[in-house]
Amino acid sequence: MKKLLSSVRSALIGSLIIFSLIVFGFPPNSSDQLLMGSFFASLFLISSSGATLIVYRMRVAQSNKEMILGSIIPSIRTGLLIGGGITFILVLNTLQILTVWNALLAVSILFLVELFFQGGK
Image (cartoon, rainbow, N blue to C red; front, side):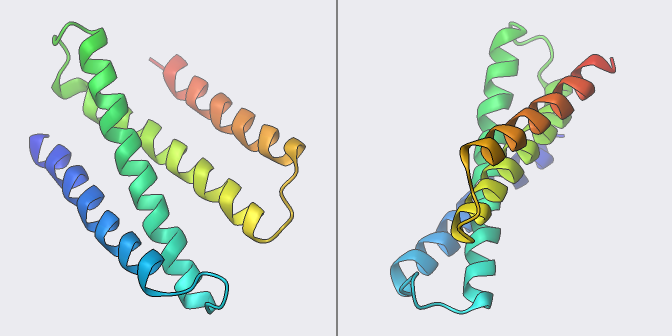
């Protein structure tokens, strides 16, 4: 399980490097679809792995360090949901079809999915 956590950390570092190469190396307005796809893929990896690490630290602190290894899988699931939500909303914004109602609907769906997984214990 600790290897899983270290692989999340290495994914965060690797995706930060790729993201910085894309952002500082290419102009975002005149890019093709492959570059935009790699931008959103690296953004998804950054947001999901960062959220995973943050949620994991919060879960460990909440349980008074009793459930250290049992908090990894739920933290990864929550991080993937947060990363997917952020990426989905930014893709909608890039396509210029994002409204407040679309964003609220996406956030509420992700919230309900997480509540479903939390209630299944």
